[in-house]
Figure 1 (cartoon, rainbow, N blue to C red):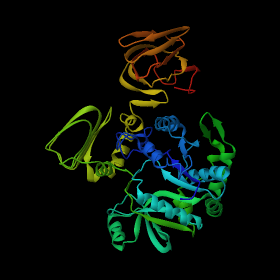
Figure 2: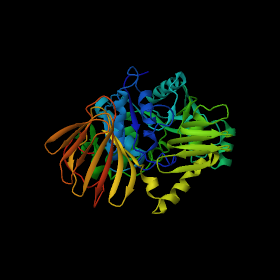
Figure 3: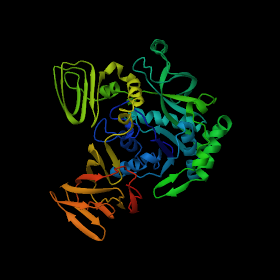
Figure 4: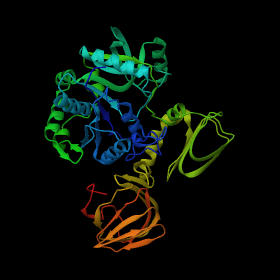
Length: 475
């Protein structure tokens, strides 16, 4: 492998294709879907070999910034930068920003490896061989994408037609094909030289910047200005809102790859899934003798070829075949696995109804850099939450103008500051914070702190917080 392969991980996408677990503020890349790590963490591990890769940069948004930082910290992964997009502008602007940053830090000959954060990939010898082929093609001035060997006539991916053999495992791109109908997808597979568009790219930054200047100058100019006007905030690089907003919202495929004469594809036969539907999750997971994948609190009987997952509520499933049954804290989805890709239509109906729109936006559980909280019960002028605080972490020093809070320690030890008094709470002990009192909660111990918080007052909104000082600048 050549030196200076710099991964640029795209981690700002939102989506609801894995509803009810994935929502607008709970993107799938930060969920644990296949094992003990999130997809984002698995992506970080895939590029962790320092003999091949430099420290990756991550491009995300304001809302996900602490998730990125905390999940990287959990792995002990070093990031070169966490770049915050002030507004969504699709992948062309993100790639352009990454190219500008990498060129300034490593020079025009560095290799930029663009990869999504929400794919499941086996980084085996076949994968490394494909990466080596991509580097060789990029060294010859090609803009390289990775084409995945189709396993069936999928309609959820774009396709790439292979052209002239360039040697070393790469081919010229003959053409890109939009997401086809099932009939057209079947016809493409019969041709034998079509591959799924993976959304992974590799190029030398000097080349991609030159090509953007030729084919998408408005994207490049906005990216350069946004980086020039960026500010550093702790571990985050905040792009200029005014400049980044001028970038057109367009994918790197449309802006560049379909226009350039130097597009190349490496046909790739490594294990890959974008986990874009519950059917894809079922296929990639290990199935029992009845073809079932069961995760979390669930019991199944006389059930086959099904995916049953629960975060909290115990699911008892009987007599199903080819079904997905997915339970989050506040919603349950039941549908046929073969129709799982159509869940977007259901989510749109939920989002259009004011009574159910909240189910598509956020979970009752909110993650924060110090831990998080789950809303258990809402009522008139009261709210009950479960707080969890990581060892050594602390919330901001704050006060509320419209509510008081009662805390009960149920696990671990809590350090509670109320005005000028500091107390230590142990399990089964409680404390009261009056409206207007300056207070803070911390975990001085070595295990997770869990608290039950009861809020009472005339207004319980999250904006009823006056922050005094905090480790992270916000709760």
